[in-house]
Image 1: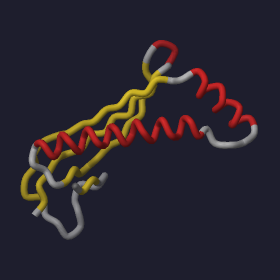
Image 2: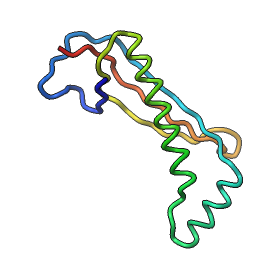
Image 3: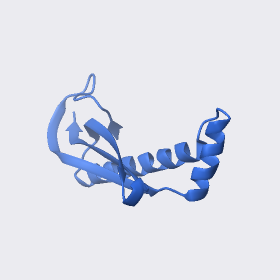
Image 4: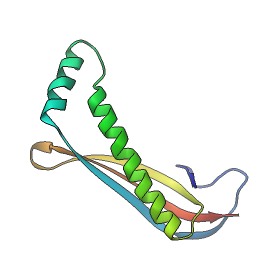
Length: 106
């Protein structure tokens, strides 16, 4: 499955547009991860716990979108957009959403 943010794939022709596909993942903020991320930030390090959680959420959202495209018979998703939103009471959750157009390439 080809996944791309562009509206075409070099050297390939779109032969069928199959529809818009999406994937979402929501992660909650963990108080202990917050505490340790804050400590790492104080000493100039990177917030590894947040980065790992965000990466996992993004990968889950892409996997959901890819599964939706495969169910439509697509061999590519073009025009992919990735969005991040803060949700919930006191902004306690982060949502990663991805969407694109499922296509069949020739």
